[in-house]
Image 1 (spheres, rainbow, N blue to C red):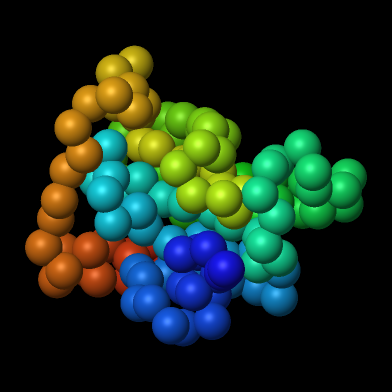
Image 2 (cartoon, rainbow, N blue to C red):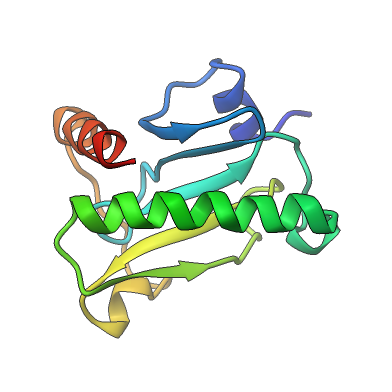
Amino acid sequence: MASVFTKIIKGEIPAFKIAEDEKYLAFLDVNPLVEGHTLVIPKEEIDYVFDLDDVQLAGLFLFAKKVAKALKASVSCKRIGISVIGLEVPHVHVHLVPLNEMDDINFSRPKKSFPKEKMEKLAEKIKANF
């Protein structure tokens, strides 16, 4: 069965997309830790990050680096944190989280929710900086 991320790639589920190329996609997390929390995924559905071959792994992180720079230029933060957990969705994904304090990347904290209009505006701002 296709993961929720594969359904986003195929356009079956809407997403606030930030950046995309033939192999990778970045979009805002709909249940973010902080404003701007972004997910970066390979378009190929692979469950575990260390099952990616070397080229895919390098490509994913190089793409994430570009997204992180655009994100930092768009959201007020000290830096962009990165996490790869991979337990919530069986599809490799990198979390890019704007950080102002260590607790901003604490996944045990309650998730936030922002209005659709705010998410759309933020996605456009990040896209413009990509």
